[in-house]
Amino acid sequence: MKKIFALVLCVSIFTLSSCEDEPLEGDFITGGISCEQATFNTAEAALNFLGVNDDNYTQLCAAYSNALQAQIQACGDDGTLQTALDALGDCTNEQQQATDIEGTWLLTAWLGETAIDLNNDGTESFNFLDEMDCYANETLVFNADGTSVGMSTSYADIDVSIEVGTTNSYDYNVSCIDEIENTNGTWSQSGNTITITDDVTAESSDWTLNGNELSIVVPSGFFAISEDATITVTEDLTFIYTKQ
Image (cartoon, rainbow, N blue to C red; front, side, top):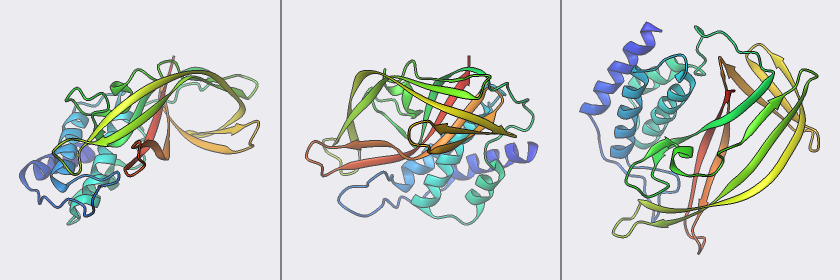
C-alpha cells in the first residue's frame, strides 16, 4: 500500500508539471479528450486518491485508474503512468474484510473514464450520478437461497451537443424516465467474485466484491447521442453498489 501511495504522489507531481497538449484528430472527439484535459483529470484523481479510506477505496481507485488510462491514450507515456496503473491492480482493497453478500445493495456511483459536467453547472465529476437525479433508488438484493433481484426505478435519456465556440466540448441534456423493472436471477460467490445469472437470458456477469462495495465495469455503459445523430459520446462505466 505504501508503494502505491508513493506512486500516486510521483504521478501527481509528474502530471502537474508536464503536459503536451495533443488533442485527438477529427471533427469531433468521440469519447476522447485533449492531452491537457487528461493530464488535469489524472492530477485531480491522484490527489483525491491520496485521501482514500476503506469506505471509498474502490470508488477513488477506479476513478484514478480510469484517469491514468485516458491520459495514456491522449498523451502517450514514458512508462511512468503505466507503472502507477499497474500498481493499482483491480482496485481491490486487501486490507478490508469482505462483507456478507446477502442483503440489499444500493447503486451509489457511475464512474466514467473522464470527468463530465452532465448538468452544465460548470463542475465536472467522474461520478456521473452526482450530475443527475436518475438512478436514485437502484438496488440489487441477494437472498440466502441463491436468488437475486435487480430493481430499477428510472433511466436516463441523454442528448449531447457541441458547446458553442468549441470543437470538442459538449453540452448535455438529461431526462429521467421513471420505470419499474425487476430482473430476477441467481447468484454464486467464488472468493471476491460474485456471479449473477439472469433468469430470462441466462447471461452471467462477474462482479467484484470489495468490503461493502460491489462493482462491475460495463464497456460503453455511458452513451449520449445528438438529435441529428452526428455526435456520439461513449464512456466505459464502473457501476458501484454499496451494502445497506
